[in-house]
Image 1: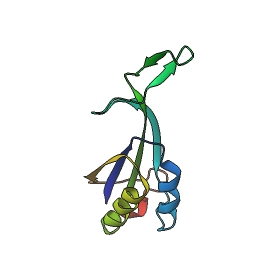
Image 2 (image 1 turned 60 degrees about the vertical axis):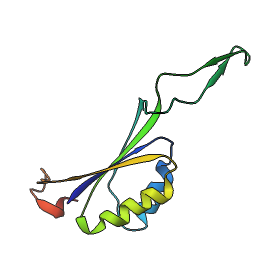
Image 3 (image 1 turned 60 degrees about the horizontal axis):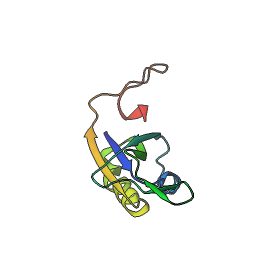
Length: 109
């Protein structure tokens, strides 16, 4: 099993989610946060357009999912096709346990 995290610069969450459903990837977690990258955020025009403000942080979205290793490339390709701006990180999952059922391993996902 692996954990795939996609840090999205734009709100492409629904497009990615729908594409993942079509390949039977159902469970994912989405978090909306504020952050900054290398490039500055979009300008905000204030005071009837006479002042320009560049915010320190802009909205970002993080999608996290645990998938079997056999689905790794398929999930990464879906994210790449549906995201305009993103960074993808892949990590191994050493152990997974579902507390209510007691299942372990891939049966958890």
